Image (cartoon, rainbow, N blue to C red; front, side, top):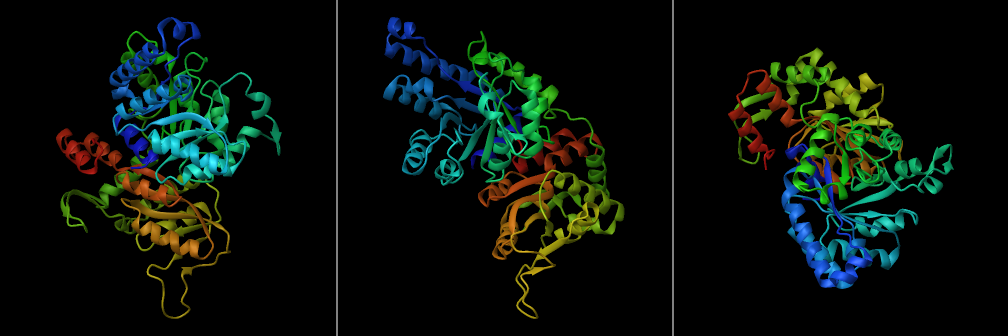
Length: 468
């Protein structure tokens, strides 16, 4: 599982956006007095204790490589032992701020991903795309680009005006469009900048340092930097957790504070979501029972959104849902995926007022032999649309057809995301996934409406991997 798929799964399963720093710091006096070996042993013991105590509340761990490099090779050994000790279902983001090109960048990537085994890394973008590409060449790995940093001197460079905008917003716009495996580092102690970046990069993951010792507040960072779904941000706490009398209690407290400001715990009712879920149940699009899937596997529920077409009100609600997802995206046309996605794409096209095309699947062999139906210009950005996603198989087929005609595909919108495999497939294809509903929200609604009890809900969640 790649970094962002692992991260999304972790965040959803624990309802936490907390990123805990693992930064063992020793003064020169302490090193001289205690000795290098004693400091390294203390550092490892502290890290292992923090990991053990905070894991139930932590979405991601972020060791800063500087604190280990300070001790040379033996310090890097402690870093590797620390990373190896982190449970495999918790992603590791190495704070290294590398920034070079060519063979040097490749060597840095080998060290970070190959030797140390991190899942993601922070990078300095000053030298441009050449800095990033050697790291993205590692399949499944991710990078976080320095955008608006938390230090007092940051505005000197990062707020220089460029085309009427501060430089950091130009960085956000540019790098967020490169790959779904790119995130941004934005100061958690600067809520205004967090909100500004979120406005220009609505779906990108943000790493928000500067909480606690640097003056930032977790709840304010969460509120300013969250995506529309209440997530999409990692709020970093290092010293405030590591130096607490009980690191586990400190982590739990921060998680609870963020839950109150985000929508990761019990979100306020969303009228459009409630309306759409109601239609999904009323029209029989969502059914409970025992169903044999195409794979031969038995499923305790089944989703078939083709039934929506028989209810005009339901189709209007679906169109509004897609319009909400598309509202922050830049594109020229909507590309619906046959066959279930075509009537939904039509509804979305009418609601949004954007023209629609669709790829032939399979490709038409007779008549004009069109690979794509509808008018388009080569080089245009198209927004891919489908009903739901479980895996990315049919989506990738559509993406390949569209790209073969020189169309640009960056984003996919769906009504329902079922599990995490599809998101991982899309990230590998270089496409960002935006889902209006998570399948777990259907289960929540059914429980609240008395359609299922808590035991049945757990069965459904276990089947889809929501409790894994």
